[in-house]
Image (cartoon, rainbow, N blue to C red):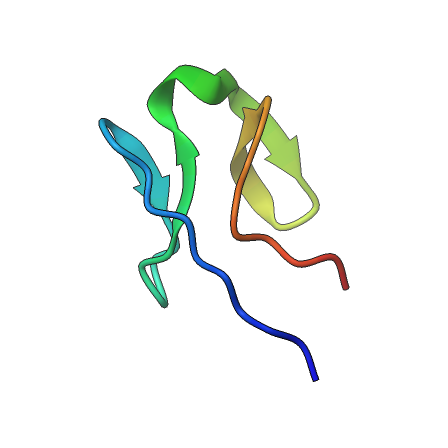
Length: 53
């Protein structure tokens, strides 16, 4: 069974719109003009609280 460890980020951060877990700091944004197959997205240098699936 996997354990869930959440990191709390200080300052301006981005979080999941569903569970509100912190994902990345505003300073970690590389580009806001990034697109993936699901549409517009942010390209980030570093993220936290993400599990590989």
